[in-house]
Image 1: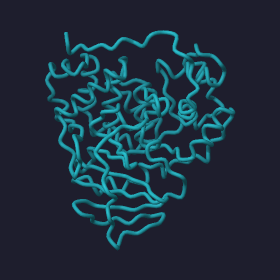
Image 2: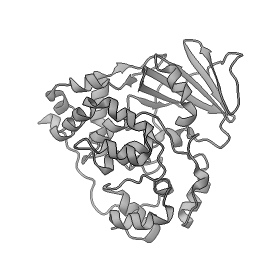
Image 3: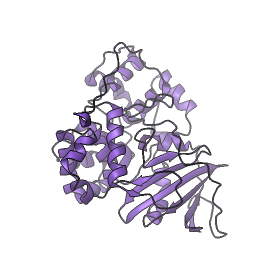
Length: 348
């Protein structure tokens, strides 16, 4: 999974935390025709398209969108001091930049580029409209307390597969620092500048064909070994089939992703948690998650995957949400070993 709680973002699927980004900007002024309500209005703003939407629940933007951030310097994701979140995405209709802010219970979205309308159309899903936290029933005091303290938590649903699949592959069997460095280096070098008035350096990730043409020495310079690079190359060769998985249920989507050699249960779970907002697809094969769940629920810091799944069994149908709440609780065992040393094959 990806980030434990805000103060210490890590790999375990609750990727979150606050990252500085473009300097604060004033809120966009919406046209008179923009509507407020359960269904939002979409209109043309200055230089981009705008949308206002009122979610009928408490919303914590950074908590919901935090799992989409790949490290504090992710070139596709930024958060500003004014509470806004910026995302640069490769949509099915082209690159797009989305800026989202929430004030007074109203969500303000502004988007630029060919993918602007696509991003705004799916803004409610991105912010958890399709999620159903009411189906979750806490079975442990720690989980119940964390849910009470985090009423704005909902599971995001991006509707995009490759933007989560490729960085998840880069995170296989390495430290988060190594993976984040590789993602940052490759996106900045081969991606395209994010459209719109983005202050600072934001980029849209490369198209599948561009990923396929990255020379072997550039993978090496980015610190990506042959195994992970080859997996990315196999994935982008069937990019259309990968993206089609978003129309499948999470179990079927994972099965399709795992057809590609090098994509296993850890990777597929990391993807559908973001692309589908899958509440039950818990990550197995993670270095830290079983011990964290075991320690939080049973005092067992040495729990393995089977022990973790047994502890999460009462949350069947909502196991990922339960695991995320446990990570957000901050109840983690003290470190007994030094951190894994950071490697950099690009220096070899």
